[in-house]
Amino acid sequence: MTLPYIDSEVFSTMDFTQNPFQKAEYDNCTFTNCNFTEADLSSTTFIECEFNTCNFSNANIKYSIFREVDFIDCKMIGLQFQECNPFLLSFNFSNCQLQFSSFFRLKLKGIKFSNCNLNQVNFAEADLSNGLFDNCDFKHAVFEQTNLKSSDLSSSENFIINPENNTITKAKFSKENVMGLLHHYQINIV
Image 1 (tube, helix red, strand yellow):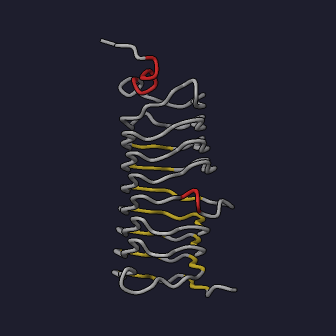
Image 2 (image 1 turned 90 degrees about the vertical axis):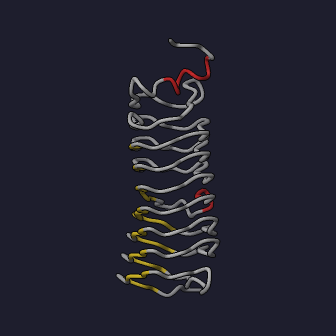
């Protein structure tokens, strides 16, 4: 089944909880103030698209394709990104709420998160090498066997990363947030 092809369209103030979202291949499209809450986006393709101030909470993104997609000021609670098509998967997030989402086992080298709430996000077994995590909150986020090699977490906070169970070679941390690397050792620094 071939999906319709939609190129360079602008979608504004659409509520896909009221009207079903059209499964298609979206190329270079912009979505602004759209509500995708619990929408079925499965098997949809997004290439070089931008989402501004959209709500994706609990949307179904199974088998969806995201290539060079930017999410700005979006609410994306509970998304299971590991269910996306992993081939050439690439996206960046700015000022987004991603609580309870999962990036389990994804290869996301060079990913960028800026000013994002990443509370209780699952990054277990993900490759986040060369990533930029600028001013992000990682409270209760899961890092297990996560590759953070050469990533920059120097302006982020509230993470707990076990250096023995994650790859942190050449990663950047600040003096203020380095405590998140020592939590595992149950030591007190005064």
